[in-house]
Image 1: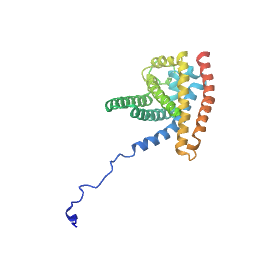
Image 2: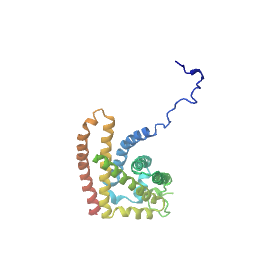
Image 3: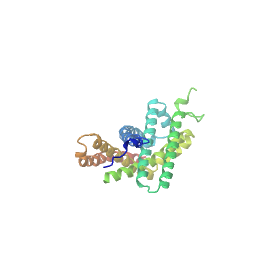
Image 4: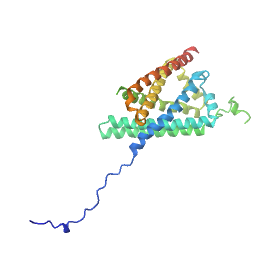
Length: 148
Length: 110
């Protein structure tokens, strides 16, 4: 019986390593549930205050927005709603695109379009909340624009 | 399975409305007239009826989303998933009817 010369077998060049993928999918799964619950409160509050109270939809105009955003409470509310809803929606569409696209090219094109649109809308919305000026019109009759 | 289909469809619908809604709200940064012209569109009776569809979509997506969270995190969730579907449908009707009543009276009543 011959014995194999095990002594002469070199050690493997590198140990086995699982591909590092991180926890992105787990984190996004968790984010969908957490942001979803917060959005239930934020969106229902938004709909109730803007559409159900007072004159409902008829009350909404420039002065209505100026009145709301004069209060930091509603600025923070709307900013949180914008970011959470856009991230929740963008991640939802990312999953839907991954589910229904069969060609890598169309998947890449649709995801690029999605991320571009999401970036533009989040940036635009954030900028609007932070740079809103209720007195852009110099002849404004809004009470916040008096005594300036 | 149909809850899952409806969740996807309502989710996509709400997402596209959100893109439009941020852009129409951004008109406040252009001028009061530009914003007032944009929101005037939403007060049109035809659009008023579409808003009922939008709120119905939001309501279903929210209630079914809570059901999904309960299935995932509540130990008894998977056992009661069917009963929770009936709960989603029941709450959907109970919350949507008063909304439609109020919103359409405002849209058509002046």
